[in-house]
Image (cartoon, rainbow, N blue to C red):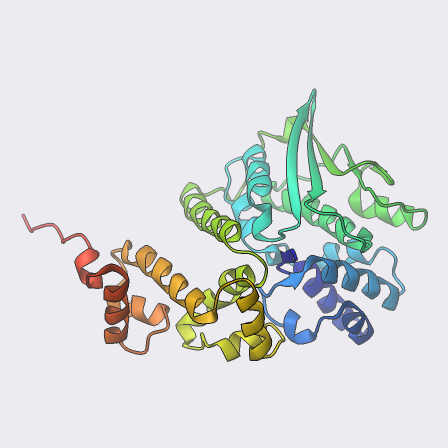
Length: 337
């Protein structure tokens, strides 16, 4: 089962709440809860997100709900993808980052880039076919993309065209008002087509140092997704890392964040050949190595970030992992001149 961070569902729920529209029928119909959408970085099955946004459009009696949500949403809510594109030096490199790291946000989608004459074409493909309609989601995604490029370049240009695989026979004037470019429906692919001339536009928030840090983090997220699947991936990437500093990295807490019982969490992990304690141990070991490489962080700080109540407990765990104490892994400070 493929997972997504659920940004579209979360933003849609916020949109309905702001207008006093009852979202419960759509939530029930999609098989998700407010609890699952109450925190950022909580995972959803991709099909559940598609279903919720479509049902929400029906509840709101708004057949272009996805576009209306995208027109109001905080662009930063997409998470690391926003900052990876926003720290790139140019539009061209921002698009490369979007394509390379799209699966950190949605495991079901692949972004491909092709260049033809005076155009650059971004094609969005599914890794697997879904029976769920996804008209609202893909229209939301298209406007998010256009708004993000406008925001990050501080330029008001229009795409050459946008294509969708789904059909649409109504509300075409509103679609064109919001996307502000030629739009073709019932096409072979979902794509965003941009003029080649904008590829060298600078990203106003470009930051090479930040980009280096974010790229390393995104590479780690992708590596985790290649090495684990399903619920295990969601637990590692979306829950435990944020819970560690609070000391709340217990199976019961994670299960509650995911909207399931601890018994169900344990069963699902067992089906994947792992256990909660094993995931927690691996995460702490990996983060410990990363943190110890930063000389600005004390061992006490690292112990706290990893969720240990005492430095001694961290020292004991680290020695069990590596055979040596944390302080011994650090480079000695240079002798004073």
